[in-house]
Length: 470
Image (cartoon, rainbow, N blue to C red):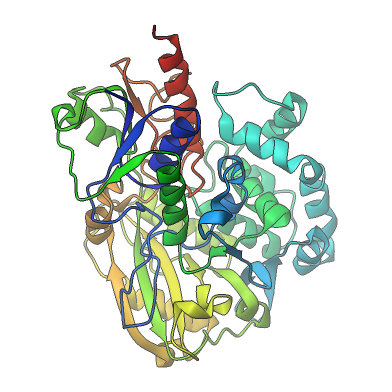
């Protein structure tokens, strides 16, 4: 009998498997797709030689992940590549605010009225970032805080809505960039703890950047898989699990799946019926005949570029998709330029480009024209560079990854209490009604992102139970 079976070979499932195998438990992973990866995969979606990331692309939480840092993933081919700037936020006048590694450079890009405010906001936390990140990403009770005072101070700043925090800024540049940071979790700007979301992304950039993985996001999943196999674990692909009886006998079962899929497989009935899925995205992967012709010089050297003319425009786009059930006329875009720092991603002189805008859950329309009109506002001539595009709306995203219910790439709405307490209002979020069944997907804390910490935290709950058994 195995000690543990993990269902789903995304970053969280693989991390849970590695954590258990490192502690001497026998582990097997079962994945429905023909490759490992979940939200961290790479494929030729457009033309030969153009390697795209169908889901995640830039990894500020991955390079900052306490779980990944504790593993020798570099020995298995994982290399982080950093653009000159982690992120830029261009404006219609050709200027840009930036999120640089340097706090000073970032503050200066906001202008003199907000530079000091930004410094005072982030500088108290940055020297203690490693401990704060571990404490923040280990909540709730998977580990006692190492620095409870700093965590409490962070909570006082971050728990209110981001709209409260943005009142500290006087000019549009800082407000728009910070609003864009919050939008990465596809939540309305006025939600609980959205201030913390923006702060985490900003601090992550200053601490370790917003890199891409050399060769594509698949490198993260491949490194985790190779490490797991060296630890004695096994991985089975093309193995769809429809019920618990499909799996071999084990002392514990760990699911890197959506809560509703787990309930269906394990027979939990309506246990997760209150769990909410949020807005989706409309994703475009481009093969380009050259770099994106951004008007703002800073955007030409940034790994990630946020596209939204103002805080109001960003807020309206989020509200349209999340609250009003319609696609925005001017979508807020998150874009990534992997081939700026990784020439292996495209033929010589060509580029891959990654972009998405927000749409309602399950939306079946086509946002391509709206996305490209938005890009043309900040990068005139963009369409002339397009060689090919791969389009994925909510149905295609859900087909690619079953955890993206209705195209929700966060595996559950990251708003309200569900941003912090997911998938149930419980101090033990990785546990389920069955004592031998656990959940480790991004439907559990700390939530969405390629960081493995949901898997890491769930593995702690699993090994504590296994060690209690005779």
